[in-house]
Length: 88
Image 1 (cartoon, rainbow, N blue to C red):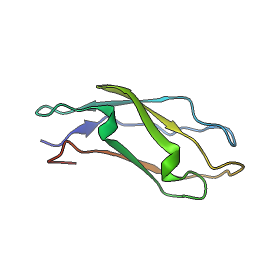
Image 2 (tube, one colour; image 1 turned 135 degrees about the vertical axis):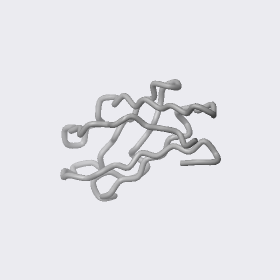
Image 3 (spheres, rainbow, N blue to C red; image 1 turned 90 degrees about the vertical axis):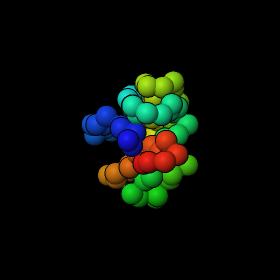
């Protein structure tokens, strides 16, 4: 079975300021997971580069921090994925 990420609600942050840690709950009934298995992709690299999406914490309660590009503002979507090595 593929791993599961609980729904993440819309968030905001101030210009040039990293977000507060955003809680992400992950589960998988047949695999051991860790927060390093998470990846994030920004829909607008000019506002938040993929390198500005970081994950910390310990399974099952991981945290996402989003750091925008300096002096940039706007709306975007961040896609969060996890793979257990056999399913995403």
